Amino acid sequence: MRAKSPSGCRVVKKDEKGAVLRAFVMRSLEARRDTAVTDRSPICLVVRSFESPAARVLASLADEIAALGLEVRTVISAIDSGDFGGDVAVGLGAPFTAASTRIIRDARLYDAHEQLIVDDKTTWIGDCMRREPAKTDSYERFAENCPATAKWSRQSFTSLWNAGRPTSLVVGAPLSIVTMAPAIDTITLHGQTVREAILTSATRH
Image (tube, rainbow, N blue to C red):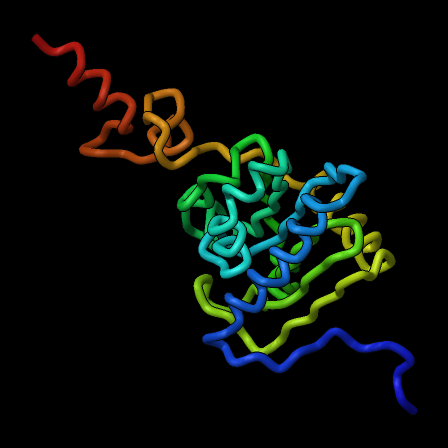
């Protein structure tokens, strides 16, 4: 029995996937720019890390996104960070901000796929969380001009966003004893915590 509508799945060579996804996002941004009704709904992204190809596509379009005044809300799976061993803030930069980025630690996300909601009728799903962060895999689904898929995707994103927590460090920001507190209070050096060693060194004459 044949499906009544296209599945949205496309067969794309791995070395072309970034370009295809970028063009997909650009069509949405251009539609927002050209429409008489201004759509300010945020772009929503669920990824393994900022090294993920979908995140890099948005980073390459930071100027276009900023020109439209759009927010990019991102949920990082934390597979590469925190409890999983890594730093989620690596690569944090435009259009991603600490205020619009949350981390969720849940091992069940190992079995999930990354997701990008570009607008209220444009959604991309692909790239399993289990792969290496900077690589792509063979699964990819584009839902273009499909409000129903976007609606369900936004509801899923909202649940993940509400379950997440804010990022703690931003690459490029000056590090201080305050921002480094979670790490320097637990790491010891010659019998002292890193905090104690810093303070002792700073008060020596």
